Image (cartoon, rainbow, N blue to C red):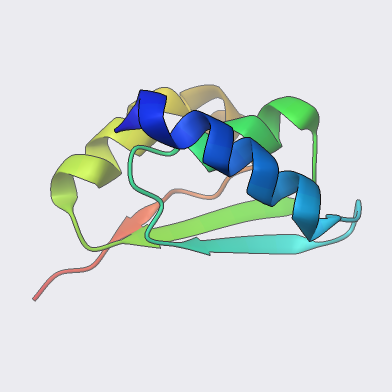
Length: 81
């Protein structure tokens, strides 16, 4: 999933025209590819995400640990039933 989403995430991020003071919310972040790309590019003031799957939460959190530690990405949230 991560490999398949990489190009789509890059394309979408380019369309968004994220400004330095923007806060970004990604709903359904999956493995966290787009969050990582935005963090690597230094886009936005803060990147937030929510996903239903505990597995995707775990993958995205592991993939974006440095962005979370730095405060650029907030601790990502999973949705519990």
